[in-house]
Amino acid sequence: MSSEVNLSAYHLTFDDEFNFFNSTPNGTATTWATTLWGVRNFSAGAGDQSYFSDSSVGVNPFAVGGGVLTITAAPGTNPAGRQYNSGVIDSKAMFSQTYGYFEMRAELPAGAGMWPAFWTQDTNDYAAREIDVLEAFGAPNASGEGGAHSAHWDVHDTSNPSGTGAWAPVVPDATAGFHAYGVMWDPKNVTFYFDGQPIGQVATPANLNVPQYLIANVAVGGQWPGQAAGETGQMKIDYIRAFSNNSSDTAIAPQTVSSPDGGGTSLYGATVAGGAPGAGTPYADTLTLLMSEDAYHGDAQGVITIDGKTIGGAVTVTALHSQGKTQSVTLTGQWGPGAHDIGVQFINDAYAGTITTDRNLYVVGVSLDGQSVAKPAATLLANGTAHFAKAASPLVLQLSEDAYQGDAQFTVAVDGKTLGKAQSVTSLHASEAAQDFSFGLAMPAGSHDVAVSFTNDAYGGTATLDRNLYVNAVVVNGAAVHGTAATLLSASTQHFSVVVAASG
Image 1 (cartoon, rainbow, N blue to C red):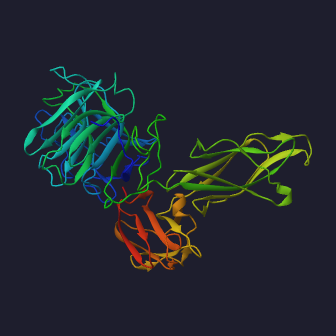
Image 2: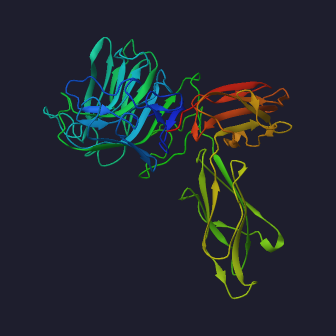
């Protein structure tokens, strides 16, 4: 059994950081389903007390904030007459994969009868081909199994419906903090991980070779965990991610990484041997500020933030405003598409009573991924923070290029209608940079065709003398659409099918 998670040959194929929560009862290509197997609000387990609810059928057990999806299991009434309302999310409509590494980082619920789980299910359903990455009890059951100190893992298949697995001790209390629960599934073995370290392994069953989708839920009660008696429990999910080493599985751009506790900020699992994944390495967002100063007894300094988080250290500005000069400050990170608050804080104001004995800071321009933000200029005459807002757009394309004798150009059409004129890409694919192009058209609920056309291919006979266009992601209403990465090596058009969920 391997010593730690090794994703060096893997690329990201699914990522939900829960900066927002997209769901519909039966799921779509861009939303989680809030019913088990996409069709049912409860399981058939003997004595199970939980009903998987949402706002369409009663109590909403889901809340999102601070990069965390919270699923609350609490006593209540529901159409099934069960004692508890709780929640389930499944990805059947939007994501499934054969083999790979799947991981959830979460804080588990405490309390008798609480039964959180993270598992995968055969896309054919009911075929008993299932990987239980995590099952845990909020308190030990009548047989003394479980409790907050241990987790259960197993594999079910048609030849062994009772499953092959075991309880594994993890930490003193998995209900008191966030931990990563993962599984590496390949044709030979199914290996289970806790915080990146292996805790169990079984040989891959012969019939466990079809796509599986992701499920996370909090069940309550039943013959195995025991009954709850009025407790309320919460599972808090930091992220759910999937990786593949199969080149036919499309690499995706990551969502903005957020952390409720300062952990889990690596995109690649709790622990990674052999370096970061190769194919599908996330592309950096680029923040560029044009700044100048009035210097007095030293240069002006500022601190840059995005969405309240400080990016890098203090920036010293040396370009004099009085001479009409500006200084370009470029920072990179993974902030993702959508709306962002960009802050510039002046931290070392100085003033001796006259206009020539005054230290000031000027922000002349602000752009994120090549796009200027609204009102990108400010004068800071005293210590304080100027804020610049980048608004979310309904449709964003994240593009990069190989430049040769000029930049790659493209046009985009939605449902056959071309949006504006050809535009140029300037972010180099080899530098792992991407550029956002936003389009403000309204996209009503339903299916849409987004077509990206590479219009000015050029080739000089070698890999270094080649102009190409890369579509790193198509983003709709702030969420990256899975399976929307493409490489255009010649003048051609790439079509992407996207589904816009109905609001409400």
